[in-house]
Image (cartoon, rainbow, N blue to C red; front, side, top):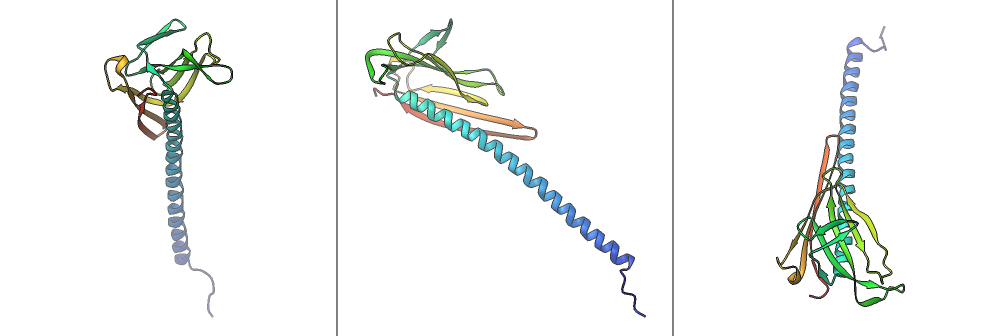
Length: 187
């Protein structure tokens, strides 16, 4: 008489094979989760960085000159590697340029990573319709650096901007760096 049941050896082999397959599947799942998390972090800092660079480029293209310094709310900002002070033509309520009148813009980096931010401060002329403001343009800043083509403020015709953003979550850390050169409006 034939026994149609499963022997203990066959059962152990089946359970072993199932265990190995389960182990491989769990390993693949956790590895792909780590990769996905790293990609999400990279995407976040890349988006933030590119947005910040684009905004700085846009505002600087409207600049008519770099200023040595400006005082806003009792704080003096001086053009150097971490701060950029520049003037932009003032605008009226219709958005038209007011001749011989300028608003002052400041890009400054405050704090240290992970709380560092790039801020845009706007100090408008009294006749300008542009509102005074202080806006965070980029967070997650690891480094911001401005380089100028001249040491003499009045001779600066372009600005090189290097912005590095960074984000760390658990064991995942990503950095993204952009560099751009912006030529001022009058050059």
